[in-house]
Image (cartoon, rainbow, N blue to C red; front, side):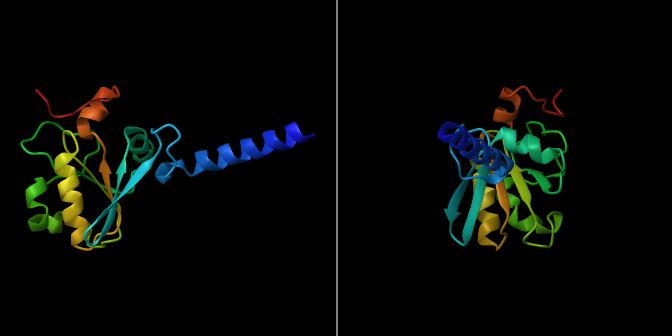
Length: 147
């Protein structure tokens, strides 16, 4: 009887974690986790390729490539804004500072800088693709706009 009870608890816990995995702080596999990063003015979250894959199924966010020079886009990218010109191009982003914005660059460093800038300007739901489009491509996904 105890083994059955323990199995049920483990199963329900796993089910609950799986259903909440899109922005979980859990570090079980490293694939479906988001790491919260505290910066001046608030925080943003680093997301993995599997989280982005899941999010793209119901794209309800603004998807921004901040890499310079242009090195290609992940499919469904909404806009390209140079990471160091993000503040000067806020008109290309949602006016609602609580809107979800996903940023990426080639490796993640430029998008981290852009994430920090947007959080400093009061944006509250900024996500940064950890590893950028290199991680996306390494996972077997296409990059558009390359000759």
